[in-house]
Image (tube, rainbow over all chains, first blue to last red; front, top):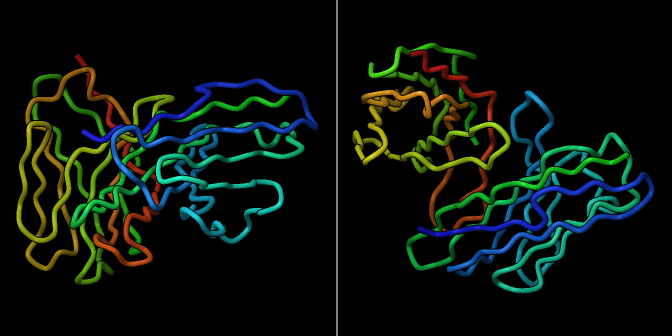
Length: 117
Length: 114
């Protein structure tokens, strides 16, 4: 089956620094990737939709200047949390949509645990 | 995406069938029903999906009512490893702008007990 990886799986950073999280589709091409955030004991919340070669579409209430998304290739999207603060500590999950003809299924990554101290 | 409602929690005895309901009364004709589960601190795992016919795979069965306003996920012989949060999602499939875009509700926390 299709595999989506995330790197790193966990990261601790100091307040005010920036952190980059990678999302890769390992055995398929993904024109679209989605970024979610999940706080403890809560459901996944969609942050943005990342399209290869174009600007990301952010959900209402998500600061695009704080959560920078780059989807430079068909297998890689990155989420950069800029000037991180403790309230940004969360579990970040990406998913990728297989663009294969008539497929268009969505596969989730294992998540990245971000802790801002 | 259509909103789904699920009971917040359910218990099931190990070895018995777990039946998880989901209401999606505003589902549109081009939306599929998907089920995922999430074990603590992991990404969601795909279980099964369907449009209007009942579906079965090695993990589970999906029963969709004729009017498509609700569905039930059945784990035929639950094990302790099936303890997880189960999410029912409805979304478009295909090449449309919203295809693949999943909106998660609160899900059902299934606890399988020995």
